[in-house]
Image 1 (tube, rainbow, N blue to C red):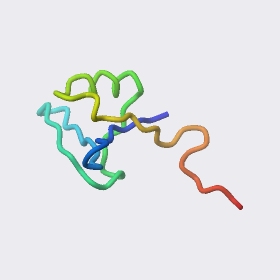
Image 2 (cartoon, rainbow, N blue to C red):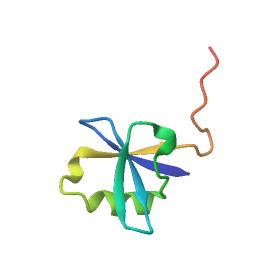
Image 3 (cartoon, one colour):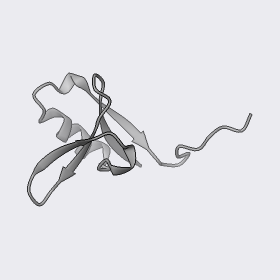
Image 4 (cartoon, rainbow, N blue to C red):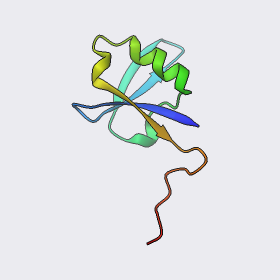
Length: 69
């Protein structure tokens, strides 16, 4: 399962560049960096206001598929 970080207030996602240790904030979810839950929690705690960031699940067993109704 993969997780991404979402800002509650602005609606932006984190794109993290590991080579230069830099956070970039993007609007498109497909550009966001995928983390494991443990890494996402560690990364969230490094922000000045971690309470403004939410860890969202992407993919996994059931994915983000639409329900048939």
